[in-house]
Each structure stands twice: as structure tokens, then as C-alpha cells.
Image 1 (cartoon, rainbow, N blue to C red):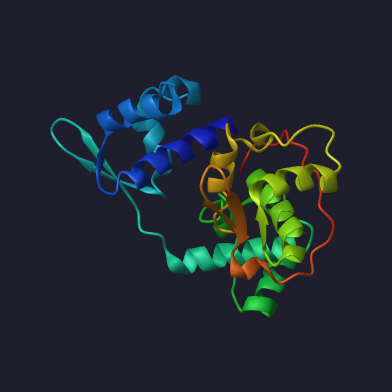
Image 2 (tube, helix red, strand yellow):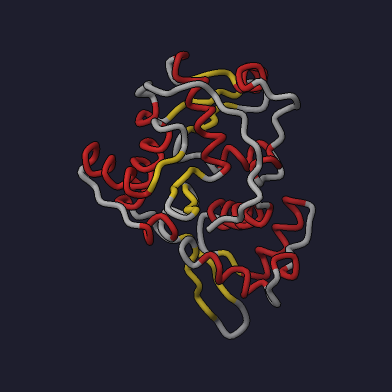
Length: 233
């Protein structure tokens, strides 16, 4: 799951460049920001280009004589709304459903169709498919607990209060470790759940705010997350 965090780090660097980013500049910035070299062999590929080609759903590539230029792909509003609706439907069913039940619920609630291929491809950042069961990915399981804790508080909570309350309500026997969800730091983990919630504010005071679609209520109790040994589909 740490590979997922590296991909997110790359995405963040390209996004924050506010324009095209050269591959050689990406490598230098990655080392500067994350204090670690971008080593493609860690991901079982021979080159950084090979690693980036796993991100064709998020990045556009423009080849020049001397370098590769990276830009962010524009988000597809239809896919984004579908993702929100699927995630919400799963959250209202304790994070997982059979595919056929999910398909039926989506048609009834949102008049949207969903296929297994959509779950495995367009929605793979949010759900994983195991046999015929569709469930939230580990980061979205974290987002589920964020929703549960913030819903009774008008959809917002101070960041420090959330960390304490999260551990108390989930009955966790250890601190909230972002690595349990596949990310090296809490900011990276929260970056991965922006579909559901946003962190606002500065170093001294930060607040977590739910996106409007996820303030509907009707959820059940928080669930401590035990990292799955099953790889992402």
C-alpha cells in the first residue's frame, strides 16, 4: 500500500506546480520535499517512466527531445459524482456490499448504473473488488470513520480533537498511524480522502470539514480498521 502513497506524492507535486512539470524537475522536487529518492525499482519497474505509465488515468505526458513534460488530467465531473455516490452507498452499508446489491442500490437511490469494470478501473482509488463483493479501500474506510465522528458535530471538528476522539470511539489499542492505511503521514492520508472531507486552517489550528454529500446521517458505529492482506484489485 505504500506504493499508493508514492503515487499520491507524485500527483501532489504535479498539481502544486500549477503548470507543466519536467520529469527531471519532478525527481529533484521529490527528493527535496519528501527527503527520499524516487526509485522505480521499489515498484518493480525498470524506470521512472514505467512507474509514471501506471498513472495514465491522472497524468498527461508530453514527450520532447530531452525530457517528458507532466500535466494533470482534468477531473471528469461525471466520474467524480459517480465515485461520491458509490462511496456514500457503501458507507451506509458498513463499507461493503455484494456487487449486485450495490448495483441495485445505485439504481434506486441515484438512478445511476455501475459495472464491475467501473469499480475495478475508474473507481479503483475508492473501492476494491474481492470476488463479487465491493468494499471501500483502506483510505475510504478511514474516511468512513471520519464521517461517523463528524456527523454529530455539524460536519466539522478541530483536527487535534479528532485525533483523540478517533482513538476513543474506535477502541483502538494504539495511536492513529497513517501507515495502517498506506500513507506515510497524516497530511497525505487526508489528501487521499478529499472526496469526503477537507482539512482547512494552518499549523496552529486546523479543522476537518465534511463535504456536503456526506453529512446525511444514517451511519452506524465506527469500526477500527485492520489492514487487509489482500492487494488492491
